[in-house]
Image 1 (cartoon, helix red, strand yellow):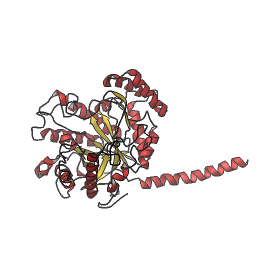
Image 2 (cartoon, rainbow, N blue to C red; image 1 turned 30 degrees about the horizontal axis):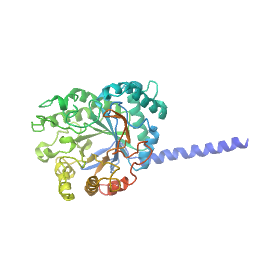
Image 3 (cartoon, helix red, strand yellow; image 1 turned 90 degrees about the vertical axis):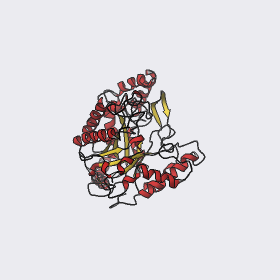
Image 4 (cartoon, helix red, strand yellow; image 1 turned 60 degrees about the horizontal axis):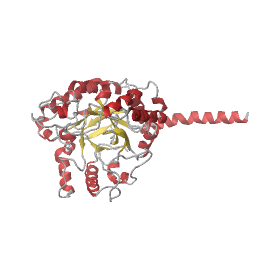
Length: 431
């Protein structure tokens, strides 16, 4: 009898506490939907939201987010939350967008031939996924896995930005992988465009926009990762970029009016210079300035941002010249800008694990981003890939997480981002 009384008391306490915890969590989460105002991203209460994101790849041959053979979804999401990230840039392929009903087990079998590895190897990967995440066995589809990841992230207060990374599920990026430029654009060549079927891309964006409506944690959709021209492509005054980006943005907004539309420039999301002419602003009337966000990529090896003189001021000037200028307020092109990819090799160097070139690059980039208090997404979360370039269980030295997806690969790295973590500007501020 005494045990029953104690149990009833504990139950009453839990019933009292849990609703309060839920209410507190709701109060801490920004009100949706998000929108843009000038160069800021705001929530529904006009409080600033600064994206501090990590990239989580899912665009390769298995067509599910990486690492689920190493840890449960819940563990990975909790790790992301505990490090202070509030957002994940989650990549996917057009192959996945157009084939959402493929069972996870079948996807790993298909990945073997697509990646040139043995079925025995991919079957082992699948077995490990189900061992760590039993809910992904049986008839679970690859889209079910995406739903689980996105919804688990949102339950932890973490936003998702969906990124159409490639058309054909595979590693990215170079000028001969077939994923670089629209096949309907000027100067078609098979090396750069054989998989980038324009109409399939538009259909895939539509499918993901419709699907994301039932997953409120998806607050943005990046139309395409690292658009890049080769040979005769893009010799028509950026006409293809203006045309197809408008089509993509229009179709996403028509099917999900809540999400932000994220747009990168040419030359692998580094070059928006064509916008400087006030008469050449992208036509965003189909989704509006309040849903428009720019994105930029920057690495130590980025062609547009060379550092031959080891002079940070010159490098920062290049960041501003090519893309960062969109943060200047009161211009036709003004809008929020996410540095949606940057990163370094995490180990093997003499400067807190970084090689000198990467250390110099990162310090300069952090200074530029902190000074502008801009949004960002670091590449990348994953400590391994199911398959990369024909290698099974491939290690990712650029990954924040270690090979076993347990903790930081380089515990010094988060402190290297310094002021990028902070919110220092805005019409109003939110932590």
